[in-house]
Amino acid sequence: MKRFSIGLSFAFVLIGLTGCGEKASAPSAGAAPPLTKITVQTDWYAQPEHGGFYQALVKGYYREVGLDVTINQGGPNAIPRQKVATGAVEFGVGRTDELLVAAGQGVPLVALGALMQRDPQAILFHKESGIRNFKDLDGRGLMAEPGAVWLKILEKKMGLKMSTLPLDYGLSRFLADKKFVQQCFITNEPFYVRQQGADAGTLLLSDAGIRPYRIWYTSRSFLTKNPAVARAFTAASIRGWRDYIEGDRKEADALIGSLNPKMVPEFIAYSVGVMREFKLVEGDPSKGERIGQIDPVRLANEITELTAIGVLGRPVKLADVWDETFLPEDVRAAAARK
Amino acid sequence: MSTTSQSRLAACLLPALTAVALIVLWYAFKAVFRVPSFVFPAPHEILAAAWDERAVLWSAALVTVRGALLGFTSAVTVGFLMAMALGFSPRIKASFYPLILVLQMMPVTILAPIFVLWLGQGLPSIVAITFVIGFFPVVANTTMGFISVDRNLRELFVMCSATRAQEVRYLRIPGAMPYFLTGMKIAGTLAPIGAIVGDFLAGSAQGGVGGIGYMTISYFSQLKTPALFATGLVACVMGFLFVGGVNWLHWRLLHSWHDSMVKKE
Image (cartoon, chains in turn orange, red):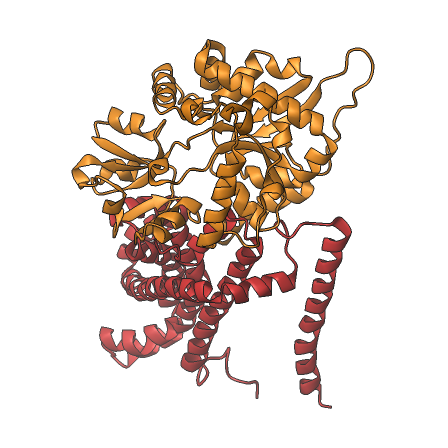
């Protein structure tokens, strides 16, 4: 049996991927066009870091633009990129670096908009460990997602030598060992470890210049066949995110809490508080950053950087992964800079 | 052509033909259903990925083989001694054997995080996981060997007033050998699997290169599916080496005397 348990999860992935056929989008005809059914695959369980999508859902912003949206909660094996690429779902949530890596492997995915201008990905450590900055990570063990691009950047660009341990998506080892270092979201794990009495510190990866966008994306083939759906989903999602950060979140938070019981009100308040404090969603308005925006210059820089550290299998061009015309005009970087 | 060489030819030819047929089917399946390579790569893409990643895969294989070998050796040693103790007295067996069976039911995937918590990340945990996966088949089989000694032979030893030590040395241990080796074969098949599972949960990587299990997750998250399949290929080779090694030992120890190895007269 043990032999199977390893292979099984991959087997399921294969079955799941090959088993899913083309999904027809609902035809739009007549005066009251029927809603187009689409599914979004997030990268984790329902949480405030996906708040804008839930806001757009409960406030009816998706329905207003003719979309019947289902949000699939993610988890450790959510594989949004694979699901979007094979057409099992229409939209996925992730990071630009993941999208570029996929493009480098010949998987055609296109970024549509950014849910976060700054990635909340960070390093979590005990203050007793003596870690003050990224250089202090040199020679230590770090529990992180194997194959993560930011790990390679820390190793190759900053010259850090670390032994990486595969992520177990838990905090028990961190709490048991004062020397333990692991990856985290500044919007998430620090709350739980401080609740357990640990004096935890964080290093935000974006402070080390690792600045992928958190994005939603679709496949090239879906985009070609359904440009209007992609545009509508993008506009409504941006509206949802603006409203989630600035407006009344009560209904969306209630939905998140019912889908994921770990999301108690105190946690959500903490998480949204951190998002606001670090301007993760809206970015820096003085630099022209806006909710939803993807700046082609910044994305092109990211491509250059990832090419230089050698994580892209084959050359990736900006046009492979990005089409500005799907962003509402006022959000685009060029408009914001004016 | 004699019948033996004919059957030998068939034994080589038939699997080769089946393999060719399967590879043809593989390509046909990919072409007909247009399955993209990141879902299901073609055989040549897997071989190309194995070649491109050869340096990484080689060091990953070494890491995993080290864990598997250490775990396997300790499982076999401790398992044999444990079985000897169990076979020595019915009381000891009655006291411990059922508990060992209960422990055997505990899936290694559940034990793995516990070992990591106790022993920390890295080789000790991986060896412990490999040990657990191989220990039980050795104990169960070898114990059976120790207690199922031919009654006539035992009475012969009693008649010759052999000491207890002599009985163990000249009767029980040789009698248990075939059973022990069967347990060892099972443990040998499981050892690389144990080390890879261990690597999944307890492995650690220097500069992004860990054992085979670690590389599996890494390739998976980077959508390097052909390389992911290539790790399967490496694991296969590793399994063959382990089982081949045990088979060789089996032959070494038994071919001169045991019924299963002696050619029919």
